[in-house]
Length: 273
Image (cartoon, rainbow, N blue to C red; front, side, top):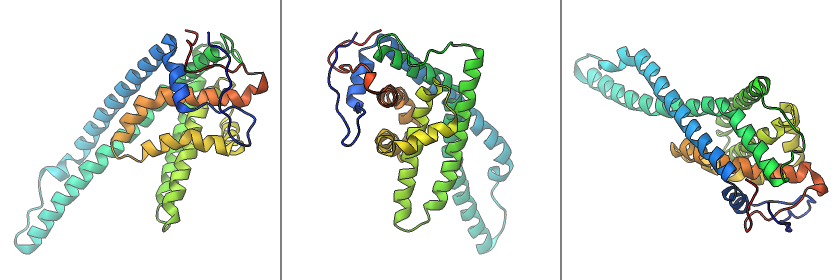
């Protein structure tokens, strides 16, 4: 068990703020949370890689007739078409690989949603001293509901991506707005896990983000920054997903449980295992 302490607070907010380093210390003190996190990292990585390979196999099979043989024309027209075919081939390979990796990760995210909901539940139970604000019974129905909620968040992610592409064309302010959009969406992704333990609807989760905008932007800031790193963003997100889940869950508890929440030292003492 952990010992009481006085956590950091956000100016203007009565709810305590738990920083990412403190959340990391809390995670590392619990063998149960570490074990579940490693399992989720392995499962997410495996599903992403398998989905990526399958997607690339299908894309290559569909486009093979076009990219196997360059256009046959003589003269300068043939030269232009040949160079254009090479450029189009490499652009297609790059875009198709990145898109396949992103979609594979999105599918893996949806499939592993019940696992991350369980991680959020274990985090809350550990933090509150082997009790939950709302007890839930694991079962097939609960897993299916978690999968459905994960798919909803995934669809929202696709919508956010489309909107971000459009906003990105706005000069100067567009890029800033896109970053804010991704930051709030990142917060929504991780809020989904502890909120699902309370059987919240998607609308209520979005309402929580609106009500606690300052906290949400702080929770989604680092995940949004990672999402901007080309290619490596998927790998880094899969690696840090459990930590971000624990971090968000702890701050979600601080808001929802209110003043009666037992505050605990997250770095200097052992968490319940």
